[in-house]
Image 1 (cartoon, rainbow, N blue to C red):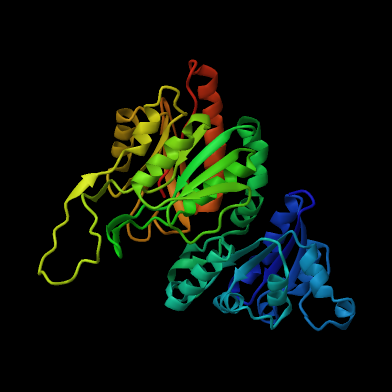
Image 2: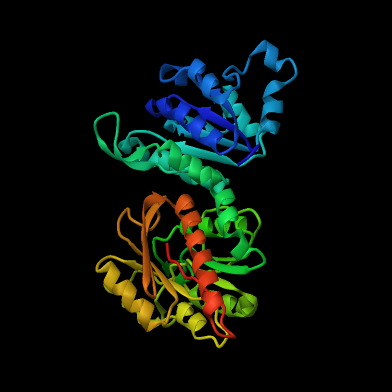
Length: 416
């Protein structure tokens, strides 16, 4: 991050006491940090402390006569290469979602073209509220990246999702693409990576379908990390509410059959295949041409199996290096190793899924298995985990490429 210009916005939550440590972590990685505080943030930390660790005067007043004599807030908005708000309170998220520019930080977020990241911090009940979650979805649909929140004990004495990620974890995510590029770039530079992400929709009639809880966040994070590692990335995505990562080509699909067709249309020139989509195993045998009316007490659907995209890639004569993802509710290791062997995969990434775990979550924890090896990654933000996985994928790709026979290339399948 040497020379990267970051505006660190600090809002009025108890987690603001961690801001000086976050500044230090970012500066340790070479970033130039300009702190912008809201007035309520002063209740939890001081300008003196933040100025001392950042080495720059703290900005907080939109109406500072000296700074605004030359439209200083616009100049500062153009200066920033990234805006990070940590902590981001529920109130600030609401103001940003509503487009309010009532203070310097809100104005900067509206006036910048730089990527914006928020590290939410609030009581777990507040985080789960319908209003906050609606604001989260709206902000993410506009390209704002959310880091966390973390799960654990909170200052109020309660426990749950809502606490701010630790400064080191936030700094690691912010610096992630650079770190990945340094470690994996030699292996992925010049390589073509195909990634599938999100759910598939299997139509019942024109208005109903069968689907799953996948948010696409893991696949999109992997696409971003792979692009940062120097790869040419083709993202095949089911319906999600996420912005396409910078530098990534995206093809939108809906059904498993559409995804199968799209994969095999472009797979011949792919070096690495990352199948992060949660592909429906079954689809209705027939799709009704008109909306089914509620006139019967029972409705039975006949289902047929969808094509196994992962297996079809692994069976190609000149297949990519093939890694599968086992999303399981029980016997995680047993099912993962079974899938690794049965589908003749090179690597499998296993995670537990269920209510609030894995699917539609900002965090994930996985165990990775390959022949004669394994590695575990503890619960962390998917953006950070994606960087770690790309690094491991690059290592295994290089190892397999050096020992593979002619006509073998890599592929990776992940389901979030």
